Image (cartoon, rainbow, N blue to C red):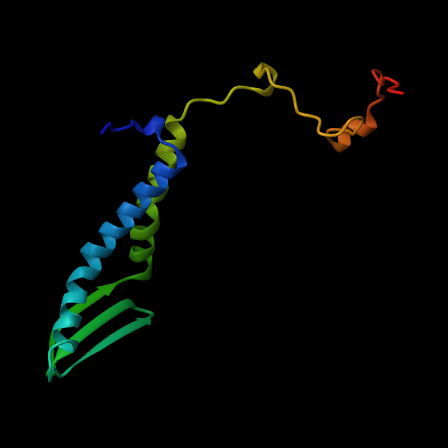
Length: 137
């Protein structure tokens, strides 16, 4: 298995890196909450409650078992937004900065393909006088 440098990444590599980051972030941040929720809800006869709140103070998750708080998670909306968006955005900017520059259209050897005979390639071709028009009868 070879590891590509950032400049050799294709968009699919970038998307895979973002997905791995978000999966890891979800595992690290929501994993302990998921375990606490499972301890309160799954066993037979378990008595507990789970409350999720969104308000001025941000996001909050409270898990209680028999009136004892077993998990309390709190995060502001800004910090959640930054954790979700900032690292992928910074990776995308670094990826764009390390990509090779594109060649200009004048340097390209390919000409646009004309699908229909005597049909203009674009609307701009209709405005230009067609000097090379050949009678094909």
